[in-house]
Structure formats: structure tokens, C-alpha cells
Length: 60
Image 1 (tube, rainbow, N blue to C red):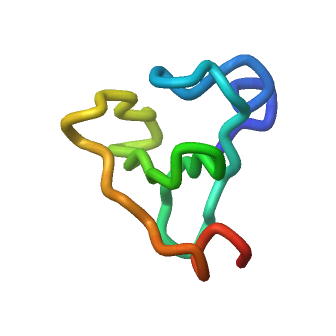
Image 2: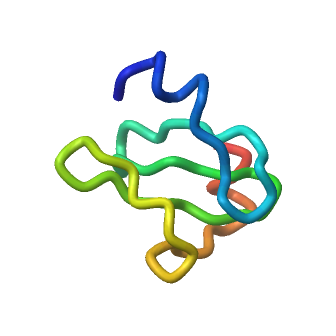
């Protein structure tokens, strides 16, 4: 994940900061507790493609 892209991309729901999860290859919104997938290195920032994450995943 290009760190420059991570600096400008935001959660489509709350416009908050997204965090890169290398293990799952996802962008995490800790506020909304959702994870957006990366497909071929491209973030898929569609709410319909996001998955809910547990509180444990948010803390990790």
C-alpha cells in the first residue's frame, strides 16, 4: 500500500482516517468498525463491499 495514497484516502461513510491492515490487505475505519478490501492494490471504498469488524480487530 502506497503511504501517499493512505494519507489522502478517507472512509466514504464518515470521512475519517483509514488504517492499512497488511495481514488482511484491507483499509480499516476504526470509528465505523468496517474494513474495505484492496483488489490488485486498489481500495474498493464501497459500503456494499465493506465488512464489519469486531472490537478486538479495531484494537489490534
